[in-house]
Image 1 (cartoon, helix red, strand yellow):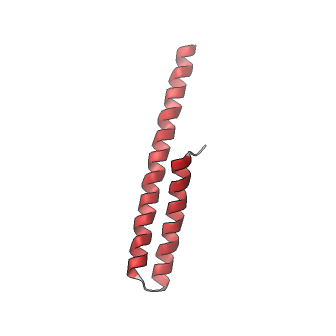
Image 2 (cartoon, one colour):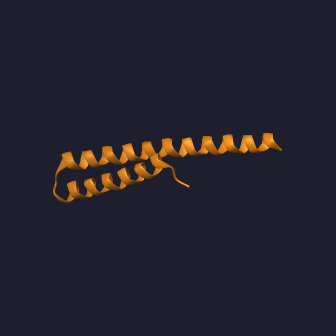
Image 3 (spheres, one colour):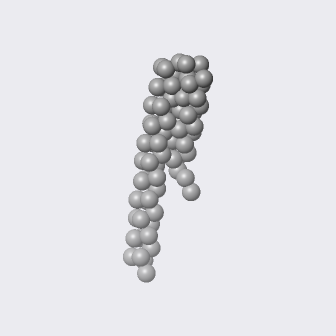
Length: 68
């Protein structure tokens, strides 16, 4: 299950891709660059969220192992 950072990161990626497409269609290099930056930021945020989730899952697994 995704956490908040993963979900928000995915939204930012999609918004960035949309900005890039709009910038490409209108020949607006600044809008296209903003979209690229937003997409990368979203990927980073999603990656941080995924890492946080994986660490949490690993801690839960260790806890379960210790209970046994």
